[in-house]
Image (cartoon, rainbow, N blue to C red; front, side, top):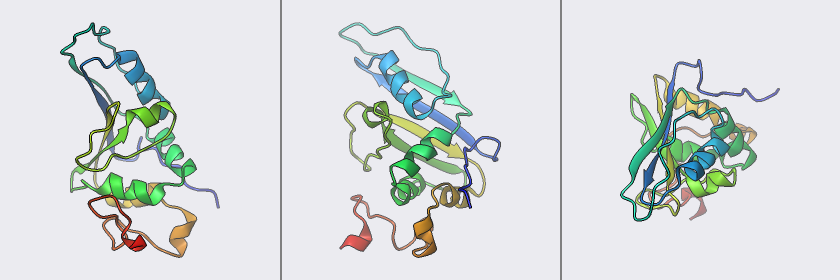
Length: 168
């Protein structure tokens, strides 16, 4: 049976994708990194900063499809890691998580550990709505879960340092 392809669009969720432009960040390059993972992201660009810059802008777009992002985490086989990071700050209203802009430029998804500053900045993804926990589990489902089921916050969830608890 083929995998159900979720996108977050018309599924009862709000999706906001954003990235802060600081200092000498080049708006076109930041936009390119976002578009590599979220191709339907739309946002106007501020003027290119001149050195020295005190730029403090945010590129943001509502209603962005998570389809390409979900496809990327499936191709990279990082579904359990994605479930852990996407649900780390999950509450009754939604979740927020970050991915590396530098990795996104290469079409890859990389999740920064809490408290780490990513070289090149981050893309922030906010998903809101009810029953999001079930949706996250479905969006990151893979055949291995037939043998080792996973749930948000289960005993297999990685620890605060990002280490898998099952490896120690």
